[in-house]
Length: 336
Image (spheres, rainbow, N blue to C red):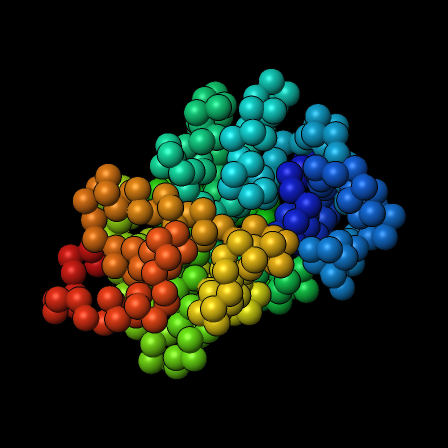
């Protein structure tokens, strides 16, 4: 069997490595800190990011990137979005030409407004046809425990998507394919902003009616901007649209929802991020979303109010008033 390298020793990278190792693949995990790599090798548990889940013996961890990807045909990138470009640069001169890169990070690069696959392609253009994405409603905590999960793999090349589908699929981890790379990325990134909104509503003490409204209208916003960027409408009715949005907006596994709850309860953003000690991708993505809104001249009212709360000093209570008193409009749009 081909070797697999997983770049990133957080909860998601560890869970995916375990999934692949249990299928029989020899899997290497790249950790930025040698101390964490040593801990994973010795304790067979990622106590910081995925406690209680046993790491199989056919997983090896190292802080040496070149050693980790040596002889690996499949390279899974599972690192925070702000590190994608840096790691792609490191891979540029050491990656094998027949390797396939599978990105699992969800976000948009502020400034450039590039999706993650575009960042990778810019730094490693020769990998253009050998990049895939894995996305969908998939909390690492549940995947690590082998609870039934369904995800989607996207690639411009159908053969690549099918190959990665075969790599990951198992009786507990069902994988679908999709050729809409843009739609899969947009859905996976922007759902984090909407999850912040539902968390804020929870923190304010609102109920199920409010959450249902935010999720539904949030999906409309995601589809609206996604279509402008070239995505297929139907993608947002699938796992990386409705699926990822529902799980991220409702689960306490979601860092974005938990951060939103704390904001709704009156805590400051800097304090929340420091206390969580983990990346909350929706905060960074929210800035990029507002830049996209201006670039494509698309109205994104929920995302705008989340931005105002995070960065413009608007109180959550005022943001709710702003949303509820907008000019009346139709519900159904042509995006679906």
